[in-house]
Length: 184
View (cartoon, helix red, strand yellow):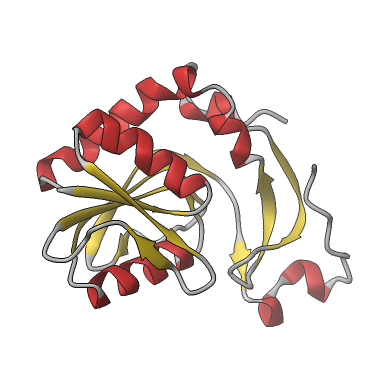
């Protein structure tokens, strides 16, 4: 299904999704899988959305835009280009940061924020490296994504309804629903 419940021409039009029962890298279970890789298949189409995201973080005057690999780094690079800012990225599982961030003002950009674990881990690494997070933004916020991460408000272009649960409280597990394989 294409997630076009929002306005026509939205970033949602670029993201296919599927409802089901999924386990995420964060350890949580959820009822929506998004093919976020599809966002980056045609950068020219995504560029206006990246510019809109850049406009959301511009007031914070970041020197660097950093994103967690993979999708967050692609998004961050497009936003950095739009802001004429430096670009950095973090690499899981330890979220080691590549790029000069010491003493710099940093916007963390991700493709989508669900639990916020990749952004939080990236923020911790940036702080340990001497950077200051001044903005957090994503193309998409899923369900009840955190309104604040790294001590700053989270900006986003669109919200997608979804649910997220720790496995012990997952209602889909409680009724015996098997985990679905993410679509390829």
